Image (tube, rainbow, N blue to C red; front, top):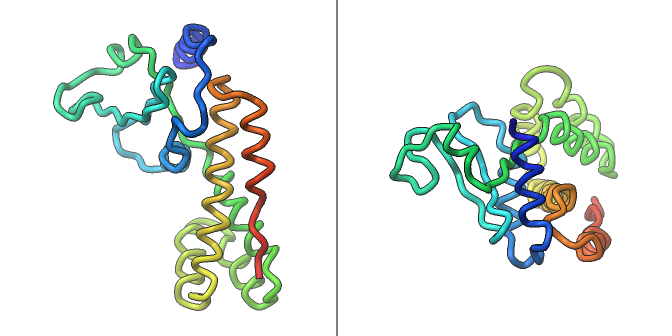
Length: 175
């Protein structure tokens, strides 16, 4: 049902293409990364680029309850989280590209098995605090690029604008 809803919303707004300046890439990136189990959904208004959070208790406006069926009747597009392995690959790529062999090895070891995200964060913050801002820059560039790709996949932005953005935002160089 969600895919058909997304398809019909795409058709309804096929004439309307958002400019990247009309959307908050950081918010979309946050929605794509949201792995929480809370009863909520991120929803994008394809006409305005505005992102909303829906819950059954507070609806879209934070005050009026709305069930899932009512949500399906809107023209909003769900922004479902990407699988956790996508974000795990960012940690692996970061660790692999570091020139500090010890940091690279320890961070790569930290992401093996269950609890990888917590161990990576603990190792990074406790043992390599000088790399925290480097990690954040790396992670954020990739997350914003994924947001652009998500918008492009749904034909909500112009392909040329998306290509320019992606070309201008490669992975940052790592120490």
